[in-house]
Amino acid sequence: MTPRLYRMRPWDCSRRAVSETVGRAEVATEPQLCPAPDTPATLGDVSATGQGTRSLRFELVVIVASLGGLEAVSAVLAGLPGSFPVPLLVVQHSRRTQNPDRLSWLLGRRTTLPVQTAQQGLWIGAPGVTVIPGGSTATLGEARRLHLTDVDGLGGGDALLSSAAAAAGSAVIGIVLTGMLRDGTEGVRAIKRHGGRVLAQDPATARARGMPSSAIATGCVDFVLPPHRIAPALVTLIMAPGGADLFSVPTLPWARLHA
Figure 1 (cartoon, rainbow, N blue to C red):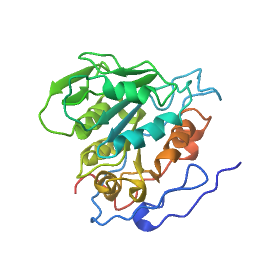
Figure 2: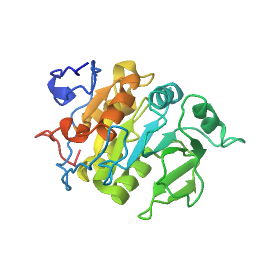
Figure 3: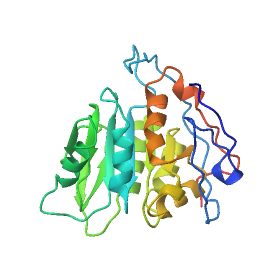
Figure 4: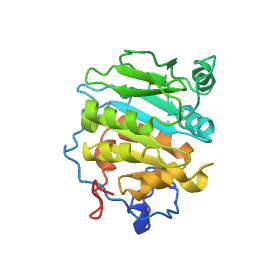
């Protein structure tokens, strides 16, 4: 079935749907502006199975979630095929527990992709899911290795999104899911500034609207979708021949870096 395109309202950034339907989000905050990309997008030669003769256009997906995140992240991962060719990093706000692998175990029951818990110095390059353990903040270095820091509070989305954008440039896709407050907001600005793509959960489908609404209000979000539509969007952008170009969204004229 040919995807249908929908006209979005101005606060939804005139985004086009990646599949048959698209979420609609009510944003109560004032628009916070975001820049045009520094790096132009290019598309690798990718086959229908996701295996390309040149490098893929996107090489990394970073997912940030908080309250209600287990269900939302599970919905995204469950929709991805086992052949999904790029690594995914998951930040789920939680405190340190006696079993740091618990979230990895839970997500591993919901996806055919391999799932592991992040460790200090872990190289991020192979396909699969890497979960940042609770009570830790992670950053990605230029060599694509993780640096973990113990923290007392919750958060970490901004740090990982921003460092991923600095390390991988326009090859990053950032996703902000359900959660309170504003974690991820600064990170999506960084991704957009480096020429990457940003998706956010439709706040109407989120257990907590704060994080996706705040991200959308920056003008840096390319697509606003319910969780079960995010996986098809990722497959289209990363694995479908020409998908990254077909669903390339121009930066809004009111969007820039500063709030």
